[in-house]
Length: 492
Image 1 (cartoon, rainbow, N blue to C red):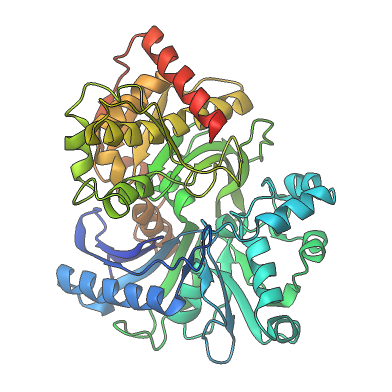
Image 2 (cartoon, rainbow, N blue to C red):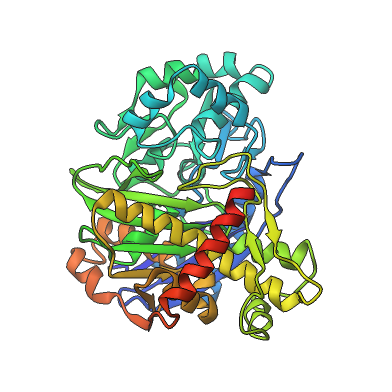
């Protein structure tokens, strides 16, 4: 029996493919970046063909690195940047426009108009989301309205919509499967959280024809098999799928109510398992599907900061403060604190719990004594401050304090950031041995579907801890930091 699982982690700036064996040893890993497209301020796009090329190259590279025969892959799991929206021709499989990325703010006016028309309460009640350009529904509506002939073609059934998971499965299966999973569907502003199906009332408000949408499936089942995909033989089951943040929650083995994780990637995303019933938020959080296994649904609360690791990339690429992202910690450690400098990383608006689409990045508290090191430290602290606001709001919704927070993603390797996060939150920060938990979650979901792992207990037992961080700062110092941050956010 084949005992390898291939996990595709299709992210915002690149695609990573991992080949894992049944003992969770990473046998092969490869990452391919692809270009970001910024047509105008606040707009972000990707070329869907560049995404596919990066996936193909990463897949071939990972298999070569692993020295594994592709025919020995038992199943493929997919995790993806969630709200990024693609509309393509069913006959050719080619997109009719660049993908509109989750960070893109082009539909801010449409969201404002929907709010002004009194629709926000309906969307909030049915989807658990807020009316924000972040989500896919208004992006799809924009494509239908702005791409010549798209609406007429969509109404004839000639076009297909999908988030990146759907586009990948379509390509992997040679166009045989047009599906998404419940976790990704819950991020579109179009799926009803109770029925786990597209909501006709919401589709009517958005002006989206139902025929353009994929079927909504579970997160661990066989959606189809590979066909005519470069680097892979035909017949491999595509068997697991979840949005990146839900996949990370699963990969962190947060299977019990109240367990939570934070992923530090391009953005920062906190998710908390709330169990079999959706928990409405009154504090700016999102209610979302965690995963669906068979007939069992697990829901989650989520808070999203749009910019985390992207702030470090901006310091590297925009300001030239560092040569590579990993230099940030060494530079920040050259000073004992930020010297009163605060960096609000609202480079694409502010997410939860503030939800200010028109907010912009802010650096304040500069003096003649401010150095590159102070700016670097303020950038790291800004990431942690955002997460503090999110977690406190999440605790208010749940009605109890968290005792530990599992962390993952590239920036979770930054000890200075993790320590400051523990100082702000006053909870244990628990870092796993494997930080690529998004890919791990996708692998688990696929492996469960094809029998590589028998059940959730086997998954839980495989999770390994690396280190814990505890609060070192006195309460008075934490309060002083938070007061400065809150003043800065008010100005962003």
